[in-house]
Image (spheres, rainbow, N blue to C red):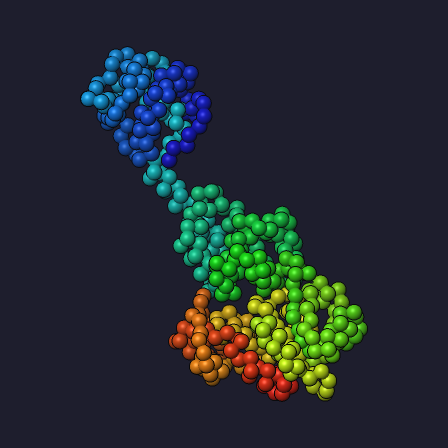
Length: 436
């Protein structure tokens, strides 16, 4: 690998000024490049060299250096590197041809040496990347494998990315967090509050989080998906952008937000709650049963049909995650669970849907809502489907569901079940058993 440098060379020569006037003559640039290439490839420097279609300028410059006309073969010149080395040495210009070439072209590392150094650097980066407290998890293994497969580890090694690799591990080691602002996470992990704002470090961390949550790598270009991934890991990029969409969720009117929720529930209109509101105006939800869906179309249909009871002894609410649950969604559902609401959770019949339902069960003691294999079979038989994408996920509450999905390879979106879901809501949560 040749590292060119301007002006006098980096390798000491007896007389660098004379070297630039002789072997460094612009007319001999092609000859110097050929000699440097030999060094890079680890070949003998003293083997004869042919300059095809040599120009008159090359012939004259070589003759001045050697002190005699070079050997010609038609339109080519035969160059004997040993003669060049002897001429440079006897004139006191350079001790040998090797040092003269490096003085002009810059230090030359043979390919074999460069490859060995790169392997060492790559293994060092891989060792750092493959460390941390998440080692052994399936998503971490897939992340490291993906970085190897697409050449990211090699590029990091070539650019001296050991520090960047260590920062990635430092960030991931702090996740999942508990509503930790993104600049605070960046400061704690790297000492720079802006280190996770659109940087290579942020992109590497988001790739890991995408694999953890079963999100396609192509979706990482969308800012809303980046925000969702951070929030799913308990990191808050923007507490105003983090929102939860609700319908029929009343709350004790002890704060302005509680009054707004109560009024929206009474009017039967959807209402958006931000994380900032929930943090500054904590609420105590008033609902016996809270249903969780993934797609806004379900909540919109419920609002249009007016299926949620606005009064009565058993208030029922609907919360929409709009994909991966946001930090605002988690805070609101946490308040619902603490208030004693029974939570029923569902999502699309895809791998991400299985992950979010499983997380809801683990985090809130939620019960699956029409998320078993008979519901999947019924939905599968009623219309067109699309292919399942991304890494698979289990369904511990109903192992046959994940097995059947893997067998068919088909995803079914939540909208397919809207009539059934509205019927469930109109029955005031009969499909949601009491909280355990």
